[in-house]
Image (cartoon, rainbow, N blue to C red; front, side, top):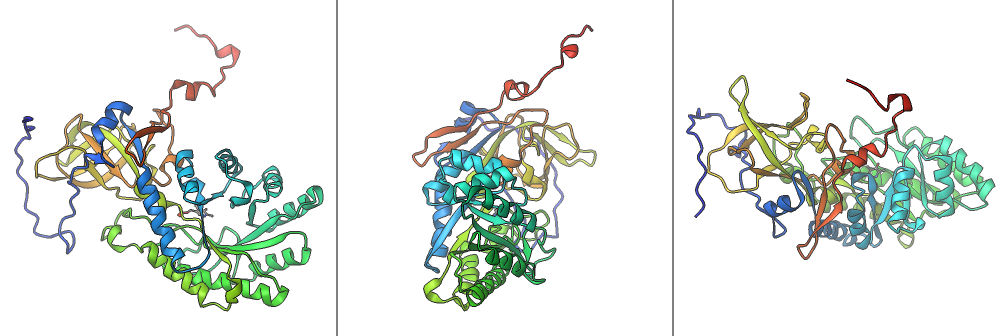
Length: 452
Ligand SMILES: *Cc1c(COP(=O)(O)O)cnc(C)c1O
């Protein structure tokens, strides 16, 4: 039998007011294994901190989302949002499940091509497509979602040069009842900009208008706005048929479905409150089916879901560096994971659990990272059992945006491993080393030496 750890006795004030009607939220079920692989083994082999992606969770989540839509609507296509997580093994898992690619920069476009995605299955979004990007996208017959008229005119010029008909859609922004409105991308529905762009495209007769797109926001905590957006896009589609006898091939409702991460300050855990894929699917598909689009010409429904597909599959494993008491006596634990690796800790209360067994005592704890900066707070307040130096922790639901927005600050980015469906641990991104930094630097001759 392993010897139990000594914990010093502690007198705790009894709280007579509960934080909410469900009582204290505790986070003290140990997470010792991920997909049957021991957390300790992963850390021993790959170091700490280390990111872990669960392939089976990726696939399970994707299939659940696809089921929610495809059981309600005849033609459904997902396109993986590269900026949410563009580690190739993650992208390719979604591509194997049938997802196209959704990219927002020339870099992401190249990454999708590098992964083997045919240009015809790449949706090119975003306000900053260069002339070279557009030339490449037109040649590859990619789906170009026009963001502004300057881009439209750039494409028009390229038509002269290339003599190829670009495949285009417009991005539409609109009032869906969510404020502040995301009106900086695309053409506005209410003020007529969207029709202005559609008319210009149709009158030019130089490009194929194949779709209508909206991405109304991110981490949308209700499904209804998607119904409003789908209704407005369907209305444009019906108008195009009336005015130009033209059918669009697809309506793209973008991404933005909330994951199960809980926002800071939320009263209840997001698992209990956020809509499910079925809720979003019901709002979108019923709006399309109830529209006046002719049933023989229903457009394909495209979804660019990012965070809701990948968040649950990502874990970040780390280690306790030290414990101390703050000036007010609050328990303070320093982890080897900083906000440089966990960008989303700025707005989520990430679920954090110890990776080993412990006693039942819990205490409100502040979790700091190792960066020498005051903003480096992983959790302001987590109800955790006491963790000792060397103990391991598992941070849950970190699959979205962290592996694209992480910063190389005073330390190097760690490895990312994937637990495959047959429980093998594969490195899918190497840990950085000094050469990752120094290979990019140049020292001018006169600064190459010094004496101290
Ligand atoms: C970021 C983005 C997405 C993905 O958003 P999530 O909130 O991660 O689902 C989809 N489409 C566009 C155009 C985006 O910019």
